[in-house]
Image 1 (cartoon, helix red, strand yellow):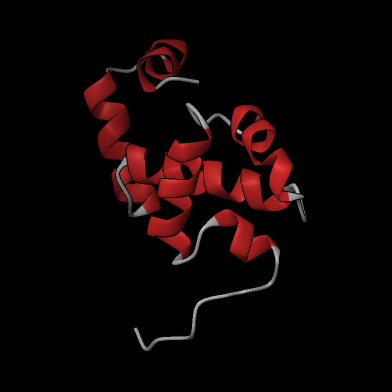
Image 2: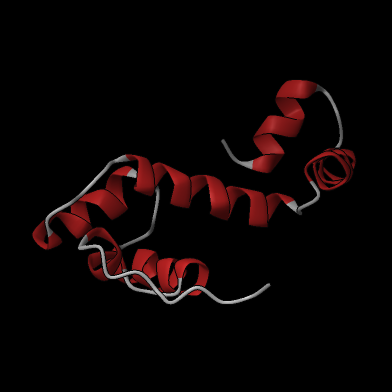
Length: 93
């Protein structure tokens, strides 16, 4: 659900809802949504590389390249490598 729709459904302003989400979750709504969408993709389990476009479509990404870029940004490897078990080397925080 889009943020303006959620705010309308909850009878609060969009600005107030952004403030509440940022304060309670510690992240702005867009970052929270990115993490939630990636978690959805990860919960689908192992995926054959030919199914990445379908995974992107079912988890709310615009297209496979959008999912791949966001996956690389957040996980450090492309989705095909991740699902094949080729994980990035651990790094200190």
